[in-house]
Image (tube, rainbow, N blue to C red; front, side):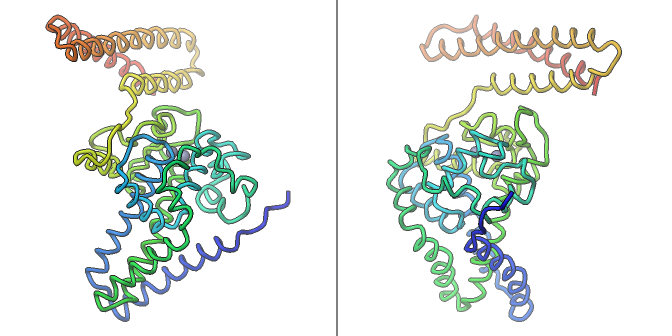
Length: 368
Ligand SMILES: [Zn+2]
Ligand SMILES: [Zn+2]
């Protein structure tokens, strides 16, 4: 099959920035040296642009998992231009298609089934989806956001101001324009590019699948470190409407912390989360499936599977009863009704659910 034409602008952009970063940054460092302030600017710019992609382009605009004040959206628009990953409108359009048709090589713009290189960067190097380039039908809602449309219209001047103007200004103030341009401009751009590209490539290849195996998305704490918390991608693909990617307190998700921090000062609100019951349910279902697959080759597999199924059904019903009671308790509290009995019931059901979970875990562990 004939390959679509090369997009020379993208090829040159990625090649030139990468080569210059690899050659010029060490050369300048050895010959002239970098100052602490330039490294600080590198880190600040990396977080500003990276978090604008994950918190803005991704969780706010692509998935609408929360609402943000215009000042926050404005900063996301600037940070997105700094990240140089196309306008928020275009990015979100691509990303919504990715979720809708994940792993479908004909429709998913960065399908992981096409391999690491394609999903990482290859998809941007040729006109693979030129027929859709001006089709923004799936982001009609975003077309009502004046900031999104303003950024889309002035994307080119904005990216020049953010990637050249800002580092030049800071470098001029600091007395070393080239040093600032190389660290806060060039090296930062290349690092953030590839770190965020890892979400489409590595996060669909390397890691665990605790919630679903219906797509290639993986959970990986190490990738979360490189991607501002987006490494919990298995969770994200099954529960894309949740503003969190790392749902546990110990998981590294600075994008979630940013959204939470902004909520504290009233700049974000309506953060959507998936009910805990559904999350636990998905996890258990995956554990059942995995264990069933593991025992399938055993001579007494039928008997084991029957037992597993029975334990699973019991656990599911305990889970449902516990969460129903919890919901009833919350409702009673809201209506300021007497809730002592309900409280005792919830406590008891929680204990029963925990015990059943324990026995489920030891049962599934015995087959792993
Ligand atoms: Zn997403
Ligand atoms: Zn994905």
